[in-house]
Image 1: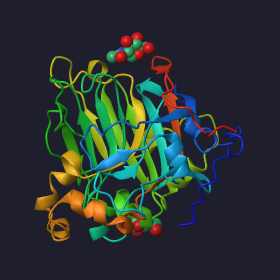
Image 2 (image 1 turned 60 degrees about the vertical axis):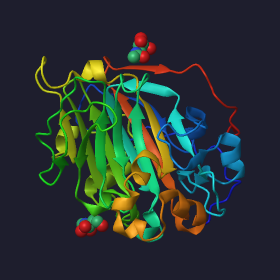
Image 3 (image 1 turned 45 degrees about the vertical axis):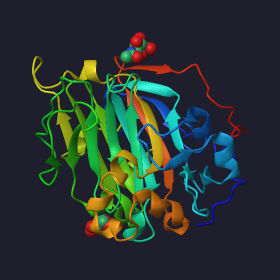
Image 4 (image 1 turned 30 degrees about the horizontal axis):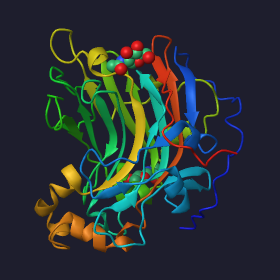
Amino acid sequence: MLFLKTVFRVGAAALAAGVVAEAASDYTLVDVFDKSNFFKEFEFFDESDPTNGFVKYVDARAASDGSLAGYYQDSVYLGVDHTKTTTTGRESVRVESKKSYTQGLFVADISHMPAGVSDAGSCGLWPAFWMFGPEWPNSGEIDILEGVNTQSSNAITLHTAPGCHMTNTGSLATTKLLRTDCNGQEGCSQNTQATNNYGAGFNAARGGVYVVEWTSTAISLWFFGRNSSIASELANDNSQEAPDTSEFGQPLAVFVGGASGSGCDIDSHFQNHSLVFDTTFCGDWAGKVWAQDDTCSALAPSCSAYVGSSPSAFTNAYWLVKSIKVYQKPAGANEKRSDTRLPLPFTA
Ligand SMILES: *[C@@H]1O[C@H](CO)[C@@H](O)[C@H](O)[C@H]1NC(C)=O
Ligand SMILES: *[C@@H]1O[C@H](CO)[C@@H](O)[C@H](O)[C@H]1NC(C)=O
């Protein structure tokens, strides 16, 4: 990949007024994150990994200097170190939106996600695109695109405080809800089946568009592979109008809160979510299941031993994010964090 570390420039003007007229909805476009503003609107998390990964999350300056984050063509690049061996944790980035959201429609056009150079090369990796709120798990977490090791399809998970039980009526028939209780670290996961929605299969198809719709009654996720007509409509949509999710067909996964008093009161369990991209290694998931993965455990006795000694296995472990659009209804709330953790070198 021809990634240059000097490509931190503000991109072309933000989206021009478009011509795509779509079904009326009361959603309004509130934010577009793309190469014109991404590193002003997302901040680097450089503390130790809360999921105990074999990782060293670096700050903005180190990410820039080390070519771990920047722009590549029309996209935002978020990568990992793939040149050095390490015994303390592989360098990587985790970025979080400064702005947070309660409810809304989130449209993420992603053309590449972290994966190995071969199936075995994915061993040790744990990439995630997700959202979460303050005082985890009280304000909830929505894991939109996530997996570990040799996993070949996306696993979509919610995490909450106790008292939130979801059903998945309406999900694609091939999607399986593993647990209805969203409480805590285990959460409620839906395993999907298509191989173009995660990892090497996602990248081979040039990614696609993930859509999350979060309302008081349900959290629904769709994935449109790059070659689908809806993905090209979404990718080429320069209008202010929200896409009409009623035209999307069955969600890849839907979490239904259900009647009040039982199920899950989504409004009290999910609030003020920041958007996050990260790539970690090993830790509480990829590391924990290492021994159970025959492909991975054949490579090294432990996940961290493999990740530390195999830099070249991670040359494809990067995100390319073309854009994320956020639409909200008037009732939706959002707030902008006042703190800026780090001085960013990404300004014009
Ligand atoms: C689109 O890509 C997927 C995954 O690569 C493939 O299964 C499907 O057949 C493709 N569809 C078209 C219309 O090319
Ligand atoms: C969420 O944000 C709103 C608006 O800023 C604020 O009033 C509320 O206290 C926040 N909730 C949590 C759980 O932080």
